[in-house]
Structures are given as structure tokens and as C-alpha cells.
Image 1 (cartoon, rainbow, N blue to C red):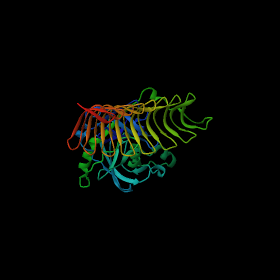
Image 2 (cartoon, rainbow, N blue to C red):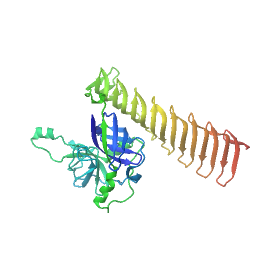
Image 3 (cartoon, one colour):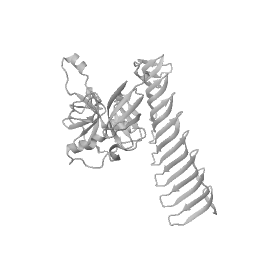
Image 4 (spheres, rainbow, N blue to C red):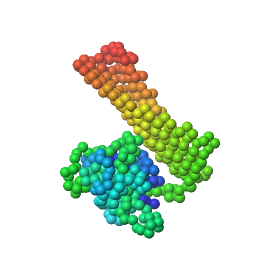
Length: 413
């Protein structure tokens, strides 16, 4: 089974925003842009099931969309108000209308969604199946959000006898930004000013960044959803969600007695798939799980302000990852069991920088340290200090070249 929808490229790092229901439960995701013949594969890196947002990352992205040129969206800093003219670009009805994007224009009917939900706003733009996930923007190119859904026509008709017309909803950009904050990616906002652009020119500049999304299901993913159940164990922990074979299977929320909470996918009673774990101290992990452990791609935001984004295995940093520290320091590189191991770059908040090899969390092997005052060391390291052959060049041009031990110069070469 194949489903389809719309999306928008928000970063030339290959990041796309769409609806979660477009890609929920899918085994493969393909992306097609209007000016490119190639179909890209993508994967989900973050999702908010309850608000219906999914963040996708294109695999092996080569910045070919619009020649890698900047994305034309500007940041909306104004309050969403009724009456504002807005537009959406998407792919209604799949390929029935063709492979090129379609424009739909209208106005904001209300700054609130169904039941006055503040996460959404109501628009009267005509939309069809396939528009879901399409970008919503105003006449100045300010990105307002993405299309979510139309009102349930059948239920309204059955309860009122009337058929509603053009009652559609979009997700506010602020809630999309909140999900992006759990990743290491952001919207590549334009620094330009679109106010003086003709609307036709603005739309023409945005269309190349709209995309059509095709999501294919496996046979297993086509199976009926598991029954839902609320279960409280003998220790006082509570699970609410899908249930099969007398254990959590599917999507559910597990609230621990100590206040910790996991919201996401389960398999055979273990956390498996995409999920969010928030502990009592305010630490938060958003990403992939396997057999109850953080495994795959994920983001861990510490309550102290530190944030790690990258690969995990068996609950620890393993593979490529980036950690931003609250004090402004930043490390990008290889990890093994929560320690810096392999090649990596450490940028200090004071402007100093080390690029080279690491072992057990320390600078060890070949590396280069550049200091903010202009000094530079190139050579061998051990246990975080100059050890072995190396060259220290001072900002005034003087050099020490030779053997080092525990950070001290021993002999000339």
C-alpha cells in the first residue's frame, strides 16, 4: 500500500517537514521535487504524533534542489490573525493532476483549530487529499505552518445535516519549531526581504522547495492497529496505548511512578522505534529505540542546557555525533560508549580549537590545536597533552619543533 502527501524542504541539509500521518507506519519514504527527475529516499528523524508533525532527512542529499540556492522563506514574527491572506503549495490528489505542484490561496479564518486548539489555525484555502504537509505562507514569504487536515465532512453532515465548505486547518510554525529544537537542524530562513516581490515571482521561488512524498507500507504495517489498553503494574507505573499478546505493542505512553515518561512506539513490551523519554529532572531524549535502549539516531537535551545529537547504540553515544555544551563549547566527531574516540573536532567557547584523534575522551594521537591568540600546536598527543613529536608555532612566528612530554618541550628535533 502506498500513501502520498506533500512536504517542504526547510534546510539545504536535506530536512523536510510534513505531517506524521503521511509517513506513519511506513517502511520506505520517497521524495520527489518538481524540477528534479531523481527520487530521494528519506527517513523520519523526529515526530510529534499528537500534533501530527514529522521531520524527515533525505539520505545522501546533494543540495541539488534549486541548485543549492537559499530557501526563500522568511521568519514570521507577527501574531497569526484572522483575515490574513495565505497560500499553500502542494500535490493534491497524488499524480491525478500531474507531477507539478499546485497553488491554493485563501485567508486565515481563525487563529485557532478544532475546539479552539492553539496548535492550529483555520484557513479557507481549498485543499484535497495529498495537500497534507504542504507549506503555508503569506504574501511576504513568511512561513506560517503546514497543512494538516480538513474538517470531517461526514460527521458534520450526520450531526447537523449541512455539508461544510473549505474548513481546513494548518499547524502553526511555532509548534514545528519546537520539534525541530529537539534535533540539530533548523529552518534556513532567508535574510532577504520579499515584501516588494510580485506574488507570482514569490510563488515561483518557493515551488522548487515543495515536494511530493510517497510512503510505502510493508504487509505487516498494513495490519489492523492493536487494541488499546490502560494498564497499571504492581509498582504503580502506568501504560496507556496499543496492546497485543498481553504486553505493549504499537504506540503508547508509559508513565513511571517517579515521574519519568516515555511516549512512542513499542514492540514485545520494549521501547522499539521512534519515541520520546522525559525524566523527572527535565532531561529529554527524542529518537530511535531498540530493545528498550536508545539505538539509532537521537537527540538528548540535558536539563543543564547541554545537547547531544547523533548516533546511539545500547543507550550510549556510539558513532557520529555532536554535543553542544551550555558553556558554548562544541564537539563534533566519533564516539564510543559515551566517550570521544576516533576523529573529532572540539571548539572551545574562548575561540580555541582542536582537530584530530581522540581516545577514551582525551586528545590522543595526531592532532592540531589552534589558539585564539594565534598560537598553534601540530603533532602527537597522549592523555590530553602534547606527547611525542610536535611543532608549536607562536603568533609572533617563533617555533618549538621536537619532542614533547606531558605538555612540556623536551628536545629539539
